[in-house]
Image 1 (cartoon, rainbow, N blue to C red):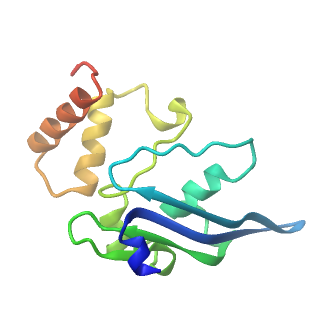
Image 2: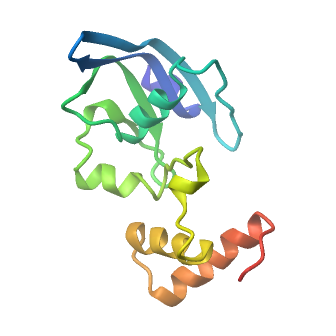
Length: 158
């Protein structure tokens, strides 16, 4: 399966994620599989409650480990610079390896802007903060990168 994964940026195979609740086990994902090609945009659509957010949160390891568990499957991610394929289900979310991937090579844009962005700070400053957290750059370099990102999406710099 690793050879097949090298053709894709992200390959999810038979992902099963269960939640432990007071009422019992909830099978949130039951056999999700998908392929995301390099350089392509992919939309994940479906009815409310079908597992779109759980899939994304599982990839990002943002679900609370005490309440949910990956029961089966793999999430194969091909690293940008090395080309190495890593099964994200096998690495600890607090590990240096995962921290070097999340926010730098893979990220999630949350659906609700009022919970994603603070109205107290400019968008540019919030982008700079993320850059400073995930890359070893100076504040000046982070500002230049933030401006570059804003220009790429045709947003004003201020």
